[in-house]
Length: 186
Image 1 (cartoon, rainbow, N blue to C red):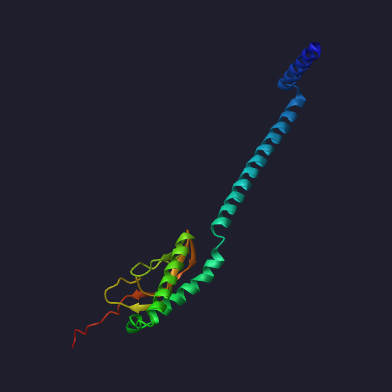
Image 2 (cartoon, rainbow, N blue to C red):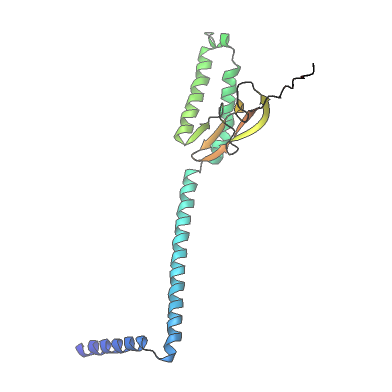
């Protein structure tokens, strides 16, 4: 048994010497071996890239799984806000309707709390410069005190889900006031 191991070591040493030798056929074998090594490295790198890409896609799928549902729920939030805005102040203070108004307000606050817990946040628009990645300009309005391109009216609230746009804010943007030409000849 010991002799068999020694003979294997001698054979391996002889094979190593043959590989390291400079026989004419060895250059072709070395090139093939190097090519096979390169292909194995490329395949390994590609496998690692695919694994990373799939892990990223999995994380995104988990993080943004609620996007469709959240987009649908935005209309509910809009309608609650409209309902509250439509109630006249004198009716808000009426004892008969106070419970109803309080219930609508609490429902709106709970909905916003759930949105925040899910990473859904309101886009601040008023007074901000127009950002086409977050705002959708619906109209231009003359405004005496705002710089051109500044948002001066918000028609619909915009929302983000984590770092992605869920819905752009629909806004009115200030435009430069028309220049008044003074007739010097008059």
